[in-house]
Image (cartoon, rainbow, N blue to C red; front, side):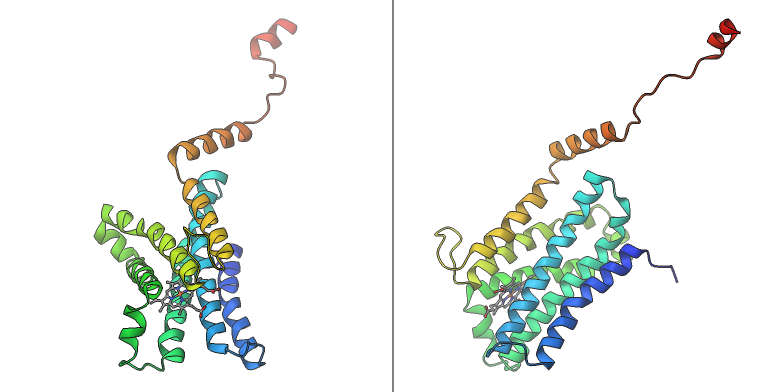
Length: 226
Ligand code: HEM
């Protein structure tokens, strides 16, 4: 078994921490009078935060040249899917008690839930095909498929704003948080634009170039002096 790097260990510990914290609050009665809503909101928020952290990997690699970070992209993506699944299971299990007579109405009659379902379906496809086997099998299409992560990000922001009973266009309701998360998503996507990436790498190589000190005397110079 390969030894984990400190960054990989930090990612695994960091990803389990929110679940441990949620369980702690549940066991110690620290949740609100509506614990199911608390669990739904917290698991949804953790999934979104992990999705944004996953999307930070590429800019950190291309802008800062910190290559090690690429190795934690897949685990971060899988943890995102894990929390999104917990969020979904809370909704269908704790909220609706797996009642298959009520669930179709709960899912298909609330547009914000349908948007969440679309995002979850994308995350499921990405998690399923994240293995080397699928990467080889799908070839170029693998990259195309995995670009859907941006769409999933956009859908989750819309789902979030809608869940808050806000209206992204009308600026109504409690939409400050979804807007802030949306802004982070836009910045992360902008960081991938080729024009910005080229500028960043030009700046990085300029900063990395060693400052020129006095040139060492060439052999010819030395001969003259001698
Ligand atoms: C079928 C899939 C999904 C269902 C049924 C669902 C259900 C819900 C529900 C019922 C709420 C409102 C909770 C409340 O305020 O009472 C909610 C909010 C939320 N969901 Fe989802 N969701 C789904 C997919 C997703 C996915 C894939 C993500 C993220 C990756 C996500 C992230 C969020 C966030 C961030 C919130 C707002 C939490 C807050 O108010 O702080 N959801 N979702």
